[in-house]
Image (tube, rainbow, N blue to C red; front, top):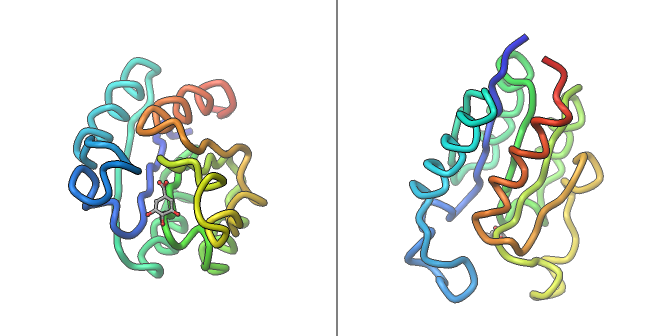
Length: 146
Ligand code: DHK
């Protein structure tokens, strides 16, 4: 079985480092990718790192992961709070999924408190900054069957 973890990032996360750094920090998406590659390498996993601003592209990536991955780390960003299609795509996966948010969505505006994804994720990490991605990969290493 593959030892590839898909890390899927949603809209506006390509702007990390410059957009609302008081909430999301100064690290860029490239920094997060390097962190994920480092932790994945330590644990013997390949990391397929993706970002898109488009809802349907996330659905396509989740469907691709069913063929090519053993787990998913997903930060759907704003689509967390709006998108049933991403939830439905994730529901069809028979491997562990961890939902990550850089900020603590529960300390923010009420519309961010609900996630369509949490109900189909094995776990949810919010508010740990970019370390949430590393924690998700470390946790998956203990869950995946390879
Ligand atoms: C990122 C976003 O862009 C927001 O739309 C979410 C999430 C929170 C994060 O904290 O990583 O509400």
